[in-house]
Length: 144
Image (cartoon, rainbow, N blue to C red; front, side, top):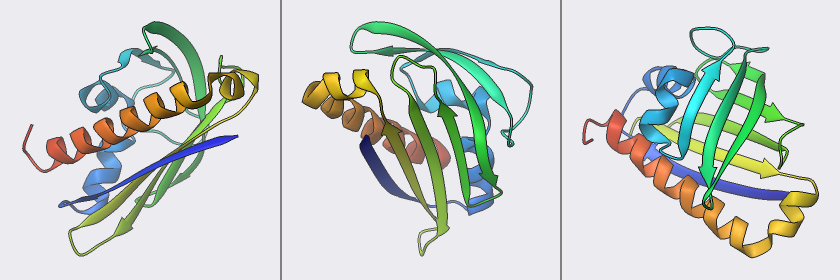
């Protein structure tokens, strides 16, 4: 299993950040590699929410489906895919901070494809997490 993590301080209340990051319709705003998202239902994530998405990664478009497996309002939400090309678990963690909210995004990958991708995929994943987390901060602080 490979684990990638990025943390940023956002000058907004946890409730505001949580509402934004758990609304799949917002994902393309701060995750430009997301070509398309098709939520199974409208509205914010909750346990059992499902979605299909197409994402561009390393020059390829990859379609996957995921399910929300954990959802603790204002503090944590986790999605998971066991049948993706690279099975993954993605978690948003939010904590109060002096700035407003400490947002941490954790992506864990597993399976043969994860191991075979090695350092190239690892570096690309880390760069994407960094860029997307920074973009999220800019959007939520009003500096698009």
